Image (cartoon, rainbow, N blue to C red; front, side):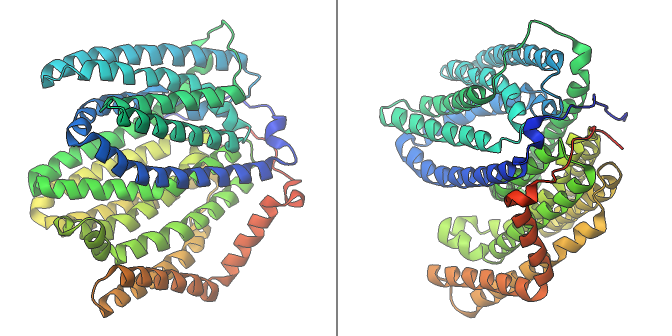
Length: 508
C-alpha cells in the first residue's frame, strides 16, 4: 500500500507553549478519572435500569441498537483522528471536512431510518422503526462534534474532552433513569443514547467551534480520508471478525458457551480500553507536534505505565476468576473461568501493542496497524474454525498465541516509521510482567489454601497486589526511579520548558 503523505503543519502556539506538557498531563489524568466515573456509573446504572425496565424492554432495545452501533463505525470516516494532524490555518481542509462529515452523517441517518422500517417489518415490532429513526439523530451530533474534537486534540486540550465525556455520561444517565421511572420503557435507553451524543457535541463545540467557510476541495481532504479509511477499515475488520467468531463458536461449542465467550471478550476488552484509551490519546496528541525521538521515548514510558497497571490487575483477576465468578455470577457461569484466565492477560498484551497505532496514525502510516489487525482477525477466525479438532482449551490458547504474534508484528513493522525500537520496549515491560506473574501466582496459591469465601478472596487479591508492589521495588527499582523522574519532569514547569518542536508528520 502506498504511503499516505500530508502537508507540513505549522507550529501552533497552543501545542508548543511552555505549559503544554503540564496541560497534557493534567488532561490525561482528567480523562483517566472520567473513565473511572464511567465505569462506576455503568455498574450502578445497569441493575437500576434492569429493575425499572425488565427483560422485554431490554429485548426491544437490543433489536435496534446494533443497527446504529454499526453505522456509527462509519459515520466519522476516521476524520475525527486524522484532522488533528492538520494546522487550523488550513481553512480549505477543515471546511471541506466539515461539509463531507455533515453530508455523510445526514445520509447515514436517513439510510438507518429506512433500514429501520424494513427491520420492523421483518421482526414484527412496530416500535423498532421510530426507535431507530430517533437513534439516528445521534449520528448528526456525532459528526458535528468531529471538527471541534480534532481541534481539542491538536491543542492538547484533553481536559475539555474529559469534561465533555463526563457531562454526556451524567446527563445521559439522568435522562434514562427519569424516563424509566415515568414508564418510558425502552425509549428511556434510546433518549439516553441520543442525549449523551448531543451533550458531548454541545460541550466540545462550545470550547472549540470554528465556523466553516463555504468552500470545498475534495483533493485537499483526500489524504485524511485515505488515512481515516484505514482507521475505519480496522474497526470493520475487528467487527466482522468478532461476528464470524461468534457464529462459529455457536455452531461448534453451543449457544451456552457462546454466552460465556462473548461475555469474556467484552469484559477483557473493557478492562484494557478503560486505561489504554487514555494513554493512546495522550501519545497521539503529543505525536502530532512532537519530535520523533522524544515521541518514541514517550511511547516506551506510556506502554510501561500501562503494563504496570494492566498486567497485575488482569493476572490477579485471572488467578481469582473461579472464585469471583462463583461469588458474582453464580454456578451457571462455570465455563467462563478458563476464558477469563486466558483472555484477560491477552487483552492487556493487545492493548499495549495497540499503543503504537497512535504514532502510526499521527505520522500517516496507519496501514501497518490495519494489515496487522486484519491478519489478527483472520487468524482468530481460523483458530476458532479448528475448534472441533483442538477443543475449547486448544482454541482459547490458540487465540493467545495469535495475540502474541500480533504484538510482535506491530513492534517489528512499526520500528522504521516511528523509531520505537522493540528491545527497549520489551525491557521496560519485563519488570511489570514478571512481578505481575508473581502476584498472580501468590494470589492463586492463597486462594487454594482455604475454602472459598468473599473475605478470603478479597484478602488474596490484596496480598497479590502487595506482592506486586514489593517485587517491583526489589526487582525493578531502577525502572521505578526512571518512571518517577519522567512524571516529575512532565508535571513540573521547569521540565516543560524545552518542549519538542513541531515536525512534519509522515515517514522520515
